[in-house]
Length: 295
Length: 234
View 1 (cartoon, rainbow over the protein chains, first blue to last red):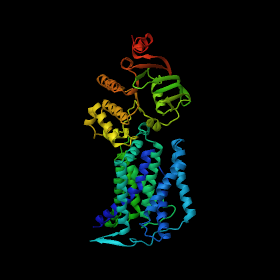
View 2: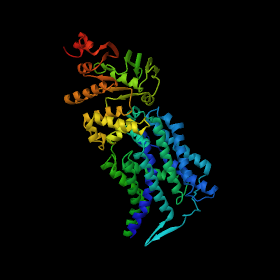
View 3: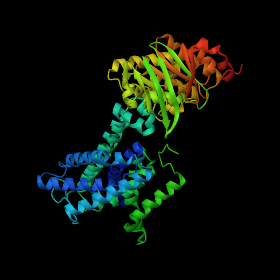
View 4: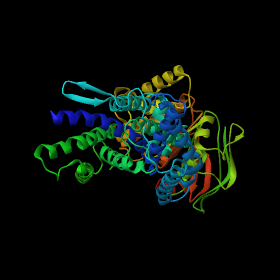
């Protein structure tokens, strides 16, 4: 029973992890750039929902569009004002560039919001739970899981079914060939950043319903997102979905084993170790990731 | 229609094309021949806007285009089919073709072009749902040509369509080029198969180490001593 409970909780968290990692894998797929500031986009998404719901006195769920818009604008601003110029330099400049963006956003958030831990306290779903038989779910986590899934499906549909989405894929596959089709790859780069920012903004907005926002919160989740991206295969959207689920499940199920055998050694404080151990093993056995097509 | 006037093109500061001029008139099949490293691909890439000339000018339908980016040149009506073929491997044959029509808005025109490509290369129609990357070399070349035709270009630039293909397919590919020519398409063809392409072409230019050393009609060039010695081994 405990295992099944952990499994279901893990799936809900996994759906959220997948949404966090989605933008990372899209930006990487299209531009071959690792966005180290991705976690800070998440953090700002959290703050956006927190402040919007507080100031406008609306339900945090209604504030989600604000975090999506903030994320999109942040992604576009990062690309047009910053990343675009880094592309002229060597690859190492892009690596350190987004790392610098990460530090800047962290300290900027610290300057604006101080280091206090903030969480949404009022809201339709906050503090409420749903019991189904022996299982109890927080409504906030159910909402996070389901809305993450919906957002993921929307993006997946956009990329695979629309003309612009296919142009984005073409750009990811072969930039030069895409330009021979008349595709303006600079715009596709910007689109990747907009989608990346928008999705992670929404993820942050969902997360702040049950997790504290503070300026350094990003690193915690971005590390998991990096593991998802590598696990799923760099640039693979299907891969990042299943990797997110896998990691969510591992994270929840593993501590239950510790509980069952009564061992402190397998306790919840080791759950992150297990995630990275699983990551480590898969990367050694299958370096291209679960769904990777790149060698 | 296309006029290249005395262009010089550099790769990282080193000139690889010196003072090359070339004309293509509407409805013509013009070929640029020359050995490896003569600058043929560089010339096409410069017309396509991937590279920009440091000197000289390129105009298309009496409009200067050498400062434009590749996507804008595609919108002017010039498509370039690179020798690498550059198929979008994981995408299906049909998705590859649809991407070729990216600049078109009218669904009916796209559908008509798709039908046209499928009639030209029935093999692509059979494999329309298959990922482009799983096609054979010859089929990938058909797909690359088909994709280039999808935007209804005014000028089609083909870079070594026969590269790496077995002799039977080389003939098939050149037949397809001849067929397009007979339908009134304007084509600029770069080839290493000097004899075949000169026989096919209305006019030809001979490129050697970045310079045009000769030009004329296909027949004229085929009969010139310098061509016979240098390229045909006669």
